[in-house]
Length: 239
Image (cartoon, rainbow, N blue to C red; front, top):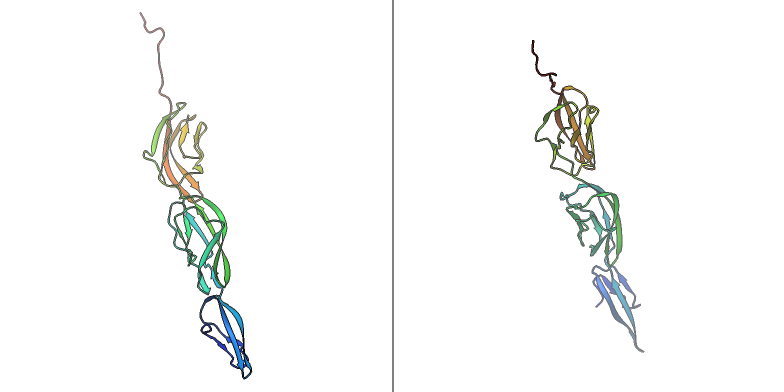
């Protein structure tokens, strides 16, 4: 029998109708008869699914390295999806569901803003939608275990390095500007150097940044004058 939805005209042998089922290629034998005899012919029929449609809304995501993303599920239409692919390959740690085209996972590597083409397909064809992904570092998180130091003019200080419990620092700034002889590390925000001038207690705000954001910590520095040194020469007197 013909696939569901198709019919055969008994006087012309025409096949018509709207197929309602998916069917692999099948060969049908059509036979026409009259009082003079019969004649047959074959007809191959394949019924594919309707091509799918796909759309992402929203069509972009900014993720954080090491943090699981919320599932990004596209709206699918048309025929049932039997396969999904992404081009180029998604960032390391993310995956694409092969039947729903849903993007999930935990990105493990940084990635600049990139456009990925997600293609849904079935026996009837395919459709594609673009999705933009950026993977930033986790923002730094700075704190000083000791938040103050009293230094001596012209004597090098022990480097004062804040603890960073967040993502790697790519740049560091300080407010207000440090005095001559002092500096901060651009990768750790460590405060170091040799203060060149006497200074009352001054609060500095050190800010570490990366692609994920920034974090600040305060540190108080006081610079005292060197203690006086005295010596008598000669060291004795007879009067």
